[in-house]
Image 1 (spheres, helix red, strand yellow):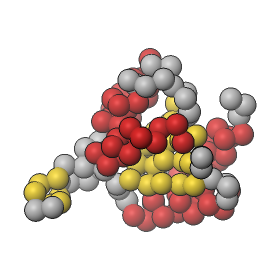
Image 2 (image 1 turned 180 degrees about the vertical axis):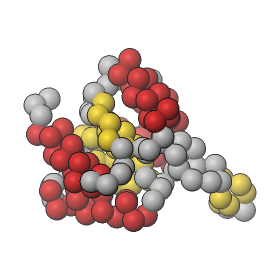
Image 3 (image 1 turned 30 degrees about the vertical axis):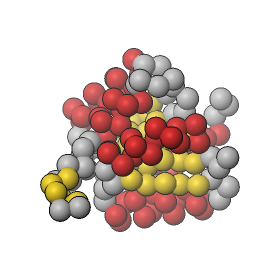
Length: 141
């Protein structure tokens, strides 16, 4: 079974360097990136046991059209609401500029027993995020 890092990020540029950072630092791990909460939750229902680390954004952009219908990408909190119904099994990084939404995600996960770290995507975000991923992946389970 391939172990992987799951990321929720709607900014294609940021998602690209997050993927690249994982590939360079952890070539033995797979990385999957979702740009909306609905698809991530559907995938997690069958794949949660493969995840060794998750990174979640809160705000995921405006509604769009999908299959001829209005599609709401949801928020990172939707993924958190799914995770808190599951046994805590891996660390979660919350990367968002939305302080209120990010705090709510963090507190909900921590109250459910999950290990949570927080980073705000400003200035040195790329370096901080990669360092945080590295530290979490090197901590003993």
